[in-house]
Image (cartoon, rainbow, N blue to C red; front, side, top):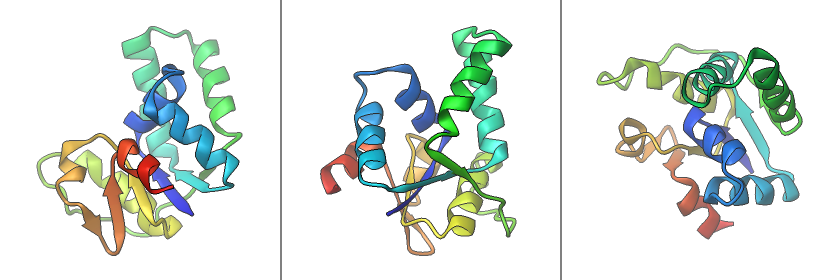
Length: 132
């Protein structure tokens, strides 16, 4: 199973041990799922950890290092411009296409309303945990 992880999924999975995202991440790792993100998404993840959680640079480095244990960084091979309301959200579509993911995990409404992009299902962690 190939999954592309959006920033909000990574935040939920790494910051709240009792969240559905954390439970799902544990299951995905146990099932040897391939989880992908991009450098740009990881940069956004680090920015949110700093801005919203007030982590120090060293704490953020430790969190990101732990993420590298289960995530593969992919380099987008195509520029996609489908989401016009928030063009920044297109980066997760680029990640999913370049990694040939089956699913995009997100809580982002702009992405969720698309539901599917090029055969890639866009779903919440709550939905995927029901599937696996």
